[in-house]
Image (cartoon, rainbow, N blue to C red; front, side, top):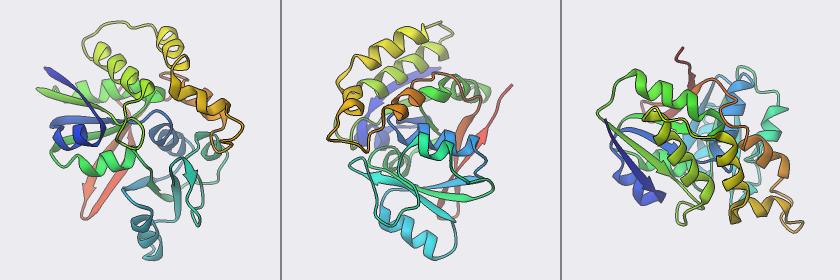
Length: 230
C-alpha cells in the first residue's frame, strides 16, 4: 500500500485512490459530532451560496459552517463541535460549508473512495480505509482556508499514516504537539470569541468517536454518513 501525504486545496485536487480529507479545527470534528448526535447525513458543499440553495430546495434541513471561522449569517449553526453536541439534529439532513474541509472534499474529484476525518475519529477512519485493502491512500491535510498549512491537520495526517502502517503513535504526544502550535492559540484569544476553547478540547479527544465519516457521490450531492468497521 502506497501512502501519500498531501496538503491544502492543491493536494486535494491531486489526491487519488482512497482519499482522506483532514480538517481538525474544526470542520470534520464538527461533522463527526453531528453524526454522533444522530444527524442522518451531511451534504458537503464548498460555498455558503450552495448551502442556501440546497436548503431552499428542501434537500437539506439545516445549514452549518463558517467563513474565516465565523458563522455564516443565516446559517442555523456555526462550525462548532460544542454547539452541535448540544443541538437537536436527530434524523436531520445537515448542509455543511467551511473554509477548508468541505472545499477539500469538493476538490477531491480523483478519489475512488473518500473520507472526511479529524483526530476525533482517526483510528476509526484508518480501520475503514484498511477494510478495502487499497493500493493507494492519499491523506490530505487541509490547513487554514486550504491555503496555509496547519500543525493540527499535518499531525493528524502523520498519526493516521503511522496507524495505517500498524505503528503505535502516542495520542498524548500528538495532542501536546498540536496544543503547542500556533493554530491552537486562537482559541484563547479574547478578540476571537467565535473560537471557543471547548471546541479545541473536543477536537483533541483523539479516537473518541468510533466511526469514520464516509463521503459518497449521490447524483449532484456529496453525502457524508457514518461508517463503522469492527
